[in-house]
Each structure stands twice: as structure tokens, then as C-alpha cells.
Amino acid sequence: MSAPQSNKIPVQQVDLDATKHRVHPRFVTGFYQNIRVITMYALLAAFLLLPWLRYNGRQAIWLDVPSQHYYIFGMTFLTQDFYFIAAFAIIAAFTLFMVTVYAGRVWCGYACPQTIWTHLFQYVEKWVIGDRNKRIKFDKEPMSATKVFKRFLIYFIWFVFSMITATTFVSYVSGTDALYNSWQMIGFIPFPDWATWIWVSIFIFAFSTYVNAGYMREQMCIQICPYGRFQSVMFDKDTLVVSYDYERGEPRGARKKGTNPENLGDCIECQMCVQVCPTGIDIRDGLQVACIQCAACVDACNEIMDKVGYPRGLIRYTTERQLAEKEKSRVFRPRFFAYLILLTILCGGVLYALNDRVPLEIDIRRDRNQLSSLNQQGMIENSYIVKLTNKTQDAHTYKITLAPQEGLSLEIRFKDVPLDAGESFDMPVSIYGDPDVIEFGQTPVTLNVSSEDGKYHVSKQNVFTTQGQ
Image (cartoon, rainbow, N blue to C red):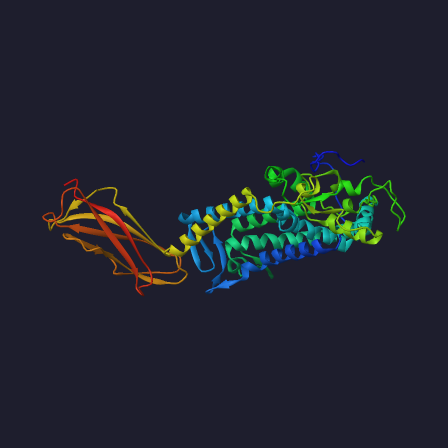
């Protein structure tokens, strides 16, 4: 294969046939793989441990969907606070875009859950069967008692990992207390006493984990994941990608150790870059949608180069501008700054909103049956329902008062309204108006709600109407 004459990194159109053979990657060590393994399993450990973290006596991260209360490190969010969730999602998306513009698909190779669980499941196969050659040979062996036992052991470990994953996912919603402390005795056997939605959720998550990490693997990245599709729109000449140096490596060919034939490039056709690839591609064919930039081929090639006495970097992280055009890459470019400025504005806005957010909410609804009425004392009465929501994670007692206004007075059933953490309460109240003082029509009124300790205070405006008399 001769070196390409184009001044661009070639892009290979990969075969998207979903019936391709199972990929059995060889496990390799090296600089990038050490970073990758530490990153992946640190994220996995965080996912498994975070539900057990407590904050102020409550699960630190608890997305209590059934009650529509979402607790995150001392903050309580309700359904009406969905704009925060939308803002966090937008920030995460633009962060991913910015990182992709600069460093390509490092998310896919180092932090994507599909990559993490696939790597874990493949390591189980290595532990039970052996390295790549043994796993390939094992697949071709006729069925035997040993093969059945090893298959069963692999599937059982996968099932355990899938169940752990599923219960951890669900514990973020149901809470660890409800999930792990709810048991009933069926005969002499303890059995989980879970709601139907918990059983269904665990089944869905466990099944998805088992199928995605155990069987679909690289097909999820190639066939289904949209990120691999639109990455080409986000790449530019200065985006870091894993690339093969054609000019240095071609033409390929085997040779004796210690020799460097003049008619051959540095690639010795050892196929190690293909063997270690988790998606089974050949990086020497050019930039491909199936490449998740895990850099396993970089570490494998560097190891081979060390053994044959050639310089490292035949396969390396580089940019099209560096590799094809022999120019210095431009790290800071308009698109990168655009994402950075936008992220700064978004993060600043969210932080300001969180800092300015009062963890107490008041909503006033008028009685829809009647705008106003005249009582026996000749006073005009307007009825309202005041909904109080304690968004803190502590119990508080609140007082409702009417902002002083001539001719208006407030009548309330309870002077004090005690609310537990996250609790809401609908309080019927009435405002009376002196017809000799207030004007005909609509008069703005303001209700104030304050916590007994004076820590929280919020106001809400509505109208007092004299219409319908």
C-alpha cells in the first residue's frame, strides 16, 4: 500500500454489517491505557458509591421521581425546577462539544459507560478463558463440558455485574433505604419487598447492561450511538485524533529484527494495532467512525517500535494539520473560544440562579367558583388557596402575612404552618376588603411567607377584586 498523495488524513468508509464476527481485543498496557483504566474504573467506582453517600442525614443524590422531589447535596428541586435540569444537560452537551473540537472522541475512549462496561465484561472473558488467542480458539472449539462450564461462569458473572448495575441505577431513584432495607419472608427465605416499578426498572437496566456490554459491544458504537455519526461535523484540521503516519510507515512489510530495509517503511505488519482495537478496525486504513480513540493501538505500536529499535509515534495522537500539512496545530481557534464563552455564560447563569434561589415556594390560586362575595358584616371577601413548599432538607415553621394595605385584612386558619423537608401544603385563606375604602375593580395584594427562624422569606402578588357585587 503506497502512501496517499492527498494532504488530508484519509477517511475510511467502514463496513456497517451488523453480522460481523465477534471482536476479541488483546489487552495491552502503556501510558494511555494506564490513564484509560484509571479513568474508567474511577468513574465506575463513583457510580457505585455515590448512592451510599449521605448528606444531612439523607441520601446525597436522590432523584425521587415518584414523589417528584430531587435531592442533590442539600438542595431540593421540584418538577417546576426542571429548567435547572435542562440547563445542566445543555452545559454537559456543550462541554462534550468543546472537548471533541479539541481532543476528538476522548469521551468515547475514556469515559463512556458503554466503553467501561464492555471493557469490564471482556476482562471477565480474559479471566475465565485467557488472552485473545485463547478466546478465539475457545469460540471455535466443539461443545464440551469444560466449554459449557466456562460459558456458564462467564454468563453468571455478567449477570451479577448487570444486577449490581441495575440496582445501583434504581437506587438513585428509589433511594438505598427503600431498595435494600425492604424485605419479606416467603417461608424461610427472605425476598425483596419492592414495588412493581422497581422490579420492572431493574429488569430493564439489567437486561440492557447484559446485552449492550455482553453482546452488542462495538456495534452499539458503530450502529446505534449518534455521537459517532456527527463527530465528523465537529472535527477540524486541529482536532486531536489517533492517526497512522503513512509517510513514515509505508510501504509496510516484515523484516528481521535490527534491520531497516530501504524499500520498506517503519510498519512491520505485526497487526498488533488491529488486535488491541476494541472495535476491531485497522487504524492504518484512515479515520473511521468506529474509532473511539482509546489509544490502545498507540500503546501497542509504541511497544513494538521499542522492540524493533524504531522511534515511537508511528501511530500517535496528532492533528491533520500536523500530520498531512506539516504545520503547527492551532490550539486556540474561534470555534473553541465560542464554546468556551458560551459555557462560561451558561455556568455563570446557573450558579447565579442557584445562589439566588430561595428554598421556599409560594403559589396563590384564586377560588374559580366566585370572584368575590359579600359577607354578613358587609365586607368583600376573596378566597384563595396558598400552596407552600418547603424546598429545604430540614423541617421549618412558616407564617403567612398580608402586606399592610389600607382597607384590607387577612383571615387564616392557622397562624403557623409547620412543614417537613420537601413537604407541600395547601392553605385556604381569605382576604377581606372594606368597600368604603378600597376602589372598585382589581387591587394588587401581596402575601409574605417567612420561616419562624427568619432565615427564609418569599413574597407573591395576586389581586383582590370587587367585581361581581
